[in-house]
Amino acid sequence: MDSIYTMPGHLIRRLNQISASVFAERMKAAGLDLTSVQFAALATLGAHPGLDQATLAGRIAYDRATIGGVVDRLEQRGLLTREVSPRDRRARVLSLTPEGLALRDRLIPLVRAMQPDLLPGLTEAERAQFVALAAKAAEAGNALSRAPLVRPEPEPGTEHVTE
Image (cartoon, rainbow, N blue to C red):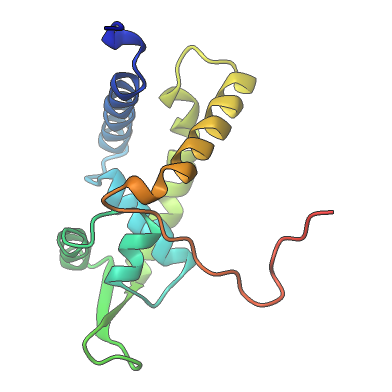
């Protein structure tokens, strides 16, 4: 058997530990009590207001059964609102409050600034290569996930054209 120290699963778990620690440390240093999943929800709703919970879960690759707790906590903090969907009375659409938008705007530069620290020891070129390879592997294995990423459909006229 190969050493666990060279197995992708072990290394991915270790990198997740590092990422979670760096994120928590930076949020604490900024005086914020926020998880990376809550940030993903705020960032996504800021860019796409009016999503329902199930769609939000898919857009951030988070389990649909537990996204409600994330949304509950953000709503309790006054960062988002839930309203009955005009298209489906069973669904609730989510929108950031002005406080939620302000927090998202404050968080984006903090989260961008911490990205190099999530892959310590790598050069900028190596980080770019790692991200490209990790994105390729995540895309190829997306269907294997219990919470697959569901990308939004491109808006008409915005499709990327390659030559």
